Length: 377
Image (spheres, rainbow, N blue to C red):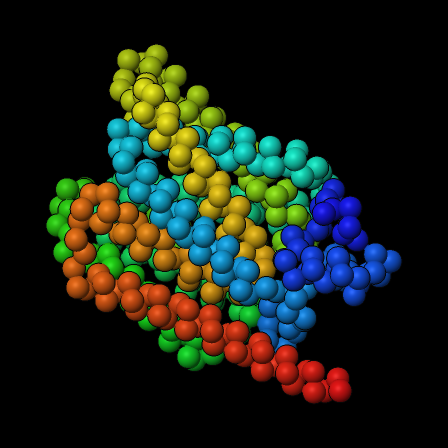
């Protein structure tokens, strides 16, 4: 297939073509000698409503929605798998996730002949480094929050990310959100609250108050860090190939995770103190579970990164928030926990608000595209 495409797989700025793009190119309507918009050398596609390019070659909302929905499913299953491995030390889970991602993304880069060193200094300092830092900070904060405060309250605070994304995307990306868009965003967060039901959890007294306050700050920090990760990932569109971004993100996380275990575990062991919370022995079942977690996390990271580059960041973050629905459904089938009517209503509200916002943005794009077509004629 690559022999017929007017682009080479080694090009770090290549965008993955959709089936319609492949069909268009193979049928000859775009000759190999012509410039293809897949390269988009003149700059990234603007996310604002005034600069919407051709649907086939620029932002593919439908394809992006499929990718980010798949990532939400993977994240939800990954969270369920993490909850099943409660005896495994948290740093081991974090390290396994990044180490597994590093192995899988290395294989993908070798098979795809992607040159991960094809980066300019501006892309490294302005996009790649901030993306790695905020991505790792988000994962570290959410791990600390879920271990040191009630899960329901932590989930609500973590789910504030779409609000931060909406605010930051206006300032940094020029994306716009109408009053109806803000209403649907807040409505989706209300759905999160109904699904989690933080008022029904009585675990607040089991944590020291000061630790719980720190954990709450960590949860808010996770939401902010995740929002900044969305912003910088969106800015990487047309500057860094998404496989290259994931590769260096996995390298960054693996180095930090291994360094943390080495620096903390051995001094505690030498001092005769309990170091089981840093590293513990693993049996065959634990290794299998960590492998599943790393595969799911890699697939989720792969798809959400590509989707964020392609579509509106606020919508991408809202759809990604639906991973808690996947976790709840997993509990129904695996643990036989029946959700309450409030949780069912919350799931319906979340899905309805999120995809209503998606359809509203798509309608605006089609309407503006029709006006542009009329102007051209």
